[in-house]
Amino acid sequence: AEPAFLSDSAGVPRRRTQDRPRGPGSGLRAWVVVLLSVAGCGSTGPTEEALPLLDDSPPPPQGDGALAFDGAAHYATVGTAGFPFGLAAHTITLWVKPRRAAGDETLVALRKDYQSGVQLGLQDGVPTAWRVYARRPYVSASDPLAVEVWHHVAYVYDGAEHHLYVDGVERGTGTLEPNNRTSTGGWLGSLDGERWFFQGEMDRVRVWSEARTPEQIADDVAGGDPSSEALVLELSFDE
Image 1 (cartoon, rainbow, N blue to C red):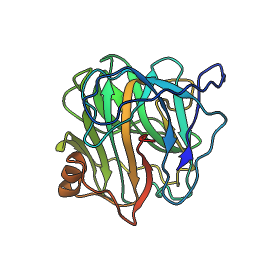
Image 2: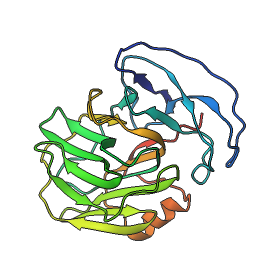
Image 3: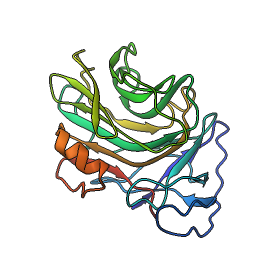
C-alpha cells in the first residue's frame, strides 16, 4: 500500500494518528491515516495528511476506515498508468455518505487536464456522471441520496451506454459519446482542488477497465471479493 497524498486549499500538510477500534458499527469519533492501495502503480501527490473520521452510523460492509471531506478545502489525488481509455468500457464504484443535499459535489474525477475524462458526483444530492470537457451529463439518477446514510454508487460505461447504480439498483442510463482520451490523474472530493468540493465520507473506491455486470455490482454492494485483472485502482482506507 502506498500513502495517500492529500492537501487542503492552503497546501498545509499535517499528520495526526489515533487508534481506532476495528469493525463495523463502532460509532466512534477517530482519526484515520489515509492509505491508498493501488493495483499496479503507486500514488502521487504533494502532501500526506490525516483527516478526522466523523462516523456515527455503521460503515459499509467489511469497512473499518473511511475518508472524510469537509466540503470546503479537502481533496485527494491519485495516479496510475492503468486508467482506461475514455471510449473503452470502464467502471467506477464507491461507498459514500453525503452530509448535504445542495450544490454540485465531486466524488471521483478521472481526467486528462480539462480536455477529457469523467466526473462522478452529486448534483443537489442526485448521483450524476458528466463529461469533463464541456461538462455535459452522461447519466443521472432520479432521486437524491439520503444524507448521513451510507450508499453504494456505481457508474458503468459498456462501450455504448452509460449506467448509474445506487445501492445495487440501476437508476439511470445515457448514450452521450464520452471524451476520447486516456485519463492521467484521479481526484477524490474535488474536480481540481479548487471547486465542487464534497462534504461527507467515502470508502472502497474502485476503478475497473471493464464494464461490470449488474450481478457484479450487486456482489460489490454485498462486500464480495473485487479481485480481477481489470481492477486498476482500489482505495480501501483500512490501514
